[in-house]
Structures are given as C-alpha cells and as structure tokens.
Image 1 (cartoon, rainbow, N blue to C red):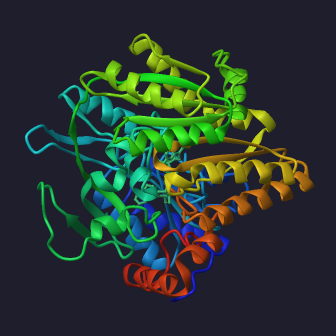
Image 2 (image 1 turned 45 degrees about the vertical axis):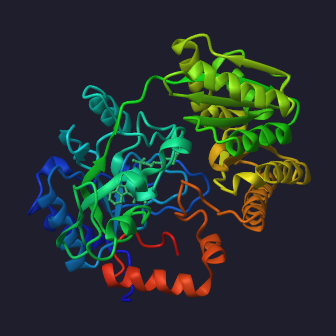
Amino acid sequence: MSRIEAPRDEDTGNLVDRLLTGLPAGSVLSDPDVTASYATDMASFCPAGAPAVVVLPRTVEEVQHVLRVATELRVPVVPQGARTGLSGAANATDGCVVLSLVRMDRILEIDPVDRIAVVEPGVVNATLSRAVAAHGLAYPPDPSSWETCTIGGNIGTASGGLCCVKYGVTAEYVLGLDVVLADGRLMSTGRRTAKGVAGYDLTRLFVGSEGSLGVVVRAVLALKPEPPRQLVLAAEFPSARAACDAVCAIMAGGHVPSLLELMDRTTVRAVNALTGMGLPETTEALLLAAFDTHDPAADLAAVGALCEAAGATEVVPADDLAESELLLQARRAALPALEAVKGTTMIDDVCVPRSRLGDLIEGIERIAGKHRLTIGVCAHAGDGNTHPTVCFDASDPDESRRARASFDEIMALGLELGGTITGEHGVGVLKKEWLAREIGPVGLELQRQIKQVFDPLGILNPGKLF
Ligand SMILES: Cc1cc2nc3c(=O)[nH]c(=O)nc-3n(C[C@H](O)[C@H](O)[C@H](O)COP(=O)(O)OP(=O)(O)OC[C@H]3O[C@@H](n4cnc5c(N)ncnc54)[C@H](O)[C@@H]3O)c2cc1C
C-alpha cells in the first residue's frame, strides 16, 4: 500500500482550490479554528490530527468530486456523521479532508408496501424513527444517542441500542447501499427486495467498516410494523450477580422483552446526581425490562416473578406509558451521568454470552478495586453487552494510566469469557491492538487485504481498525 503523508502547508491551498472546482464555497471550510472543531468524536484519550479542510457536501456528485481530488492529491479522507462515536473512529488525521455528511439529510422514500425507507447518510436516527412512525412503521435500531447520531454513522459503526434484544442491530436493517469508493466511483450494493442473494454480501461488509472502505451516500433500510408502546418494569437487586441471574432466567424462560437493561449502583447514583430522578440508591443493581406485546402487563408479571425468584427485593411495573418513558430516560442518561462523576470517561463495550454476564460484572468490580477507580456499569443486559465506564480525572496522569489499564483488563476479561471487545461502538483507534488479539493474525491479514482491494492508496480513514 502506498504511504499517505500529510500535505505540506503550501499544498493545502492547492487542495482547497481543487475542491472548490466542484463544490460551492460554503461547503468548504478551511479556517483552522473551525476545522479544529471537527477533529474528534466523543472518545477520550484517542489521538487525533488537525484536518486541512472540512467539506460538507449536499449531493452524491459532490462526494465523488471530493474523493477524486483526494485520490489525485493522495490526501486522506475521514468520513464523519454527528461525531457521537465512542472509539475515535471519526477522528481526523493530520492534513486530512474531513468529509462531514450531515448536510445530506433527506429521507428520500418511505414505502409501506415494501416496508423500506431510502435515506441519505446524514439523516438523524430519531428523525427517521418519527417519520416512519407517521406511516405506522418502525426503524428499530435505537442507540441512546438517537436524537443526534446519523444513519451513516450507525452504518459505519454497526450500532445497536436499547431495543436490539428483540429487534436486532443495524446490520439486520441495511438492505442496500450506494457507496462512493476511494477513487470516486459510485457503487450500489444489495437490494430493495425482501430477499436477495446475488453475489458476495458487500452490503454487510460495509456495515461496521468505520468509513475505511467507502463513503455511504444512500441507504435502503428495512422497516417493521410499529409495535404497541412498551411498558417497563423496574426490579431492584441486592447484587449485580442476582440481577444477571434474573436476566438468564428471563431469556431461558423463552420471554422476548423489547428491552432488558441493567444499571449498577454507581450508575444509578450518577443518574440521580445528574437528573434528580430519585431512582432507588440502596439497590446494588437495577434491572429494566419492557414488553411491547398486546398484553404487556401479563408479560411483565411473569418476568417480575422471575426477578423475585432470583432475589429481587422490589419489583415495580410502571403504571403507564409516561412512567415507562421516564425509566427509559433514566437509562439513556447513564453515559452523560457517569461522565459528570470525574469529568472524563473511558467507555468499554465488551459483549459476552449472556450466560457469562454475572462473571463479567463481578470481574469488573475486582478490576475497579484493584485500580482504586470508579467504574459504573450499564448494560444492554439481554444482549450481554456491557458498557463498563471508567470515570477518571484526565488531568491526573497516574489516574489516567490506571484508567487505561483497567479499560484494557476489562477487554481481556471479556475475551476470556468467550466475548468480544466491542458489541456496538466499534474499534476506531481506541481498541486497535485488541482487534488483532480478538481475530488473530490470519483474520487480520485477510481484513487488510480487503481494505487494499477497496482502497489501494489507503486514503480512507487511515489509522482506524488496524
Ligand atoms: C450518550 C451516548 C450514547 C450512546 N449510545 C449508544 C448505543 O446505545 N448504541 C450504540 O451502538 N452506540 C451508542 N453511542 C455511540 C454512537 O452514538 C454510535 O456509534 C453512532 O452510530 C455514531 O453515529 P454518528 O453519526 O455520530 O457517527 P460518527 O461518530 O461521526 O462516525 C462513526 C463512524 O462512522 C463513519 N461514518 C460516518 N458517516 C459515514 C458515511 N456516510 N459513510 C461511511 N462511513 C461513515 C465514521 O468514519 C466513523 O468511523 C452513544 C454515544 C453517546 C455519546
């Protein structure tokens, strides 16, 4: 692979001039104060460079122009959505073109017969959900950041969310893509039909590729009929292990909750401190279960009984939809609340077989004690996907070192328990060395060869994944 180097200062003017031959002036930002504000996503402690220029295209042709210029001048290109990512996957590299897709935000089509939506990449997740709801349809993948994150970013990271325990993750909803390749060619993958197996599944390959193989400029997404509104139950447990036992009993019992989330005591307290919501602070773990079935009260009663059998000290079904929504808001506030504890967080994303969830959470408690750190755990418990969140003071070098050490030990434990280093946030720059450990040398070599096929010059989001 040819080596890409940051352009010299005198080259940046040429880059901007070349970009302006195919883009309106307002779409090319080169003021260093402005470009610097596009340098990182939400991940702490990830290296980031200074972009040479930020481009905000509105059309597919403009994206193609950017990639052609970048290929010609051998300049790296970093695709970005809303920059809510948690692994540094959207971080700039020195001298790069930041290609922000946020202005390509049109919903092009909603088709209730084919049950699809066709969207541009900058559409915000919640905007799409509301638009399809008006047609009696649902787009289920719902990251907690859904009010800000974009569909392009969701595809880039293969994101999950709260209701994925029942409805699955982004990859299961992406039927087809239009992608601009590194050299500016436009390629369509996949289908808009209910079925289709023609050739290799390049659509799936792009999902989770973190902007390293091409730029998504249009997506065909599968929709579901809108389910009834969900009712939520909250169960308090005397230990995280007991809450995890309840999760296992619920799943082994054949129940299909639309949400099964866990917050440990640290997280509950942090949410109370941030929002004043008054969640029960004496509990060691709070489990939220929800059903969007036609008789959610009956389903909640059955699951409530399983929680009690696992040791729950209190089981409280929400009285109505408003109370249910309040509990979901508490869960969605978990990451910002933990960030407020010490000012900085490093958010792990380890996913284990749900039968090992209790072992993982107990192990995290040991790691927190060993490093004298606060680590709050919130989890998409029904998926075994945890977000152990290391809270630390970034201005304290020793605490920062211990934070990184504990972050790494949690991933090692996850792998030991048969899990993965990332259930939904991606690898980015934060977990690069861990990807190699998880997939091994042969897997890594093949992944690099795939990258080479799509991006022989290595200009697309360099330095991410591996
Ligand atoms: C408070 C909070 C809660 C969160 N909760 C969740 C959660 O529940 N589940 C979850 O999965 N994540 C969660 N996240 C992480 C984040 O929101 C997701 O990873 C989201 O999918 C990122 O979308 P984005 O638009 O911000 O993308 P960005 O962060 O801008 O980009 C993410 C990646 O996608 C690539 N990319 C962006 N657009 C394109 C494109 N058009 N073509 C090709 N590549 C592209 C980028 O290069 C980068 O590699 C949370 C984040 C925060 C801050």
